[in-house]
Image 1: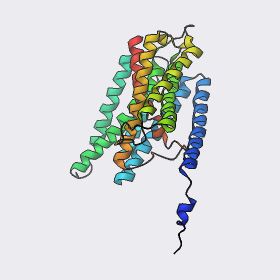
Image 2: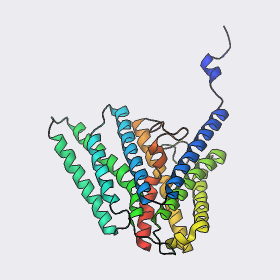
Image 3: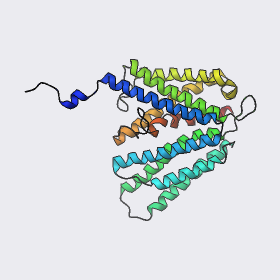
Image 4: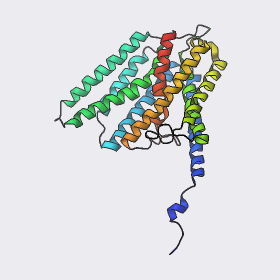
Length: 307
């Protein structure tokens, strides 16, 4: 009897090579994504930012419902949820150059109300299927809140009447600050956790997360925040106070970690590895924005308090 391992065992790459290949794919995808963000920012138009945010939300919603289809075989109320999401973003778009927080908050309540009424109206046309009917309604509503409402706080920051030292609109600079600090957190947690991570923190949710990685993410968040203030402090007047900057950065870092874990809960519950395959080394759009879903509301409410 031959002692050679099976052919598939011989062909499988070593863990070191596989990890390095994943790192290169992730690095390339990250560079491309940063190019898109910087390109949109360089155009200096809130309209471009809004279009980018709207595109991400629509794709993210479609990925969410595709996850449900893989796990349950159905995509409940995807059309209704996407339509209300687009209408909600169109409503926010008209205030892209400045609006009061009260007006923006009213838009959230209106969108949720319209969606709930539309979901119930859509359900009237077919026979009830026990708890399955309620589950499908809740799945659609959760997808709208989780993807559309949470990520729309990035758009709402663009709607705030924020000014820089020269009296010019500065809301886009705060969005850039948000993305940099959030992604520095993700990068720090990934790199430090991969290099020296030994102590698991939440293995029942994400076996790869370590305390060392979490500490690295928070450290990188502060590095990113202070780099932002050093490079464009005149555009971030509300972050001029060092104690406030520290508080905001720490809150964003913690929210980023929780946001990352939130999608881990979603994927482990549905028993799916990645939300999609759009970006090599990262996965889908939901894998990309999971941390921003939680950090955008944090920065938005800080800006309201400070402003």
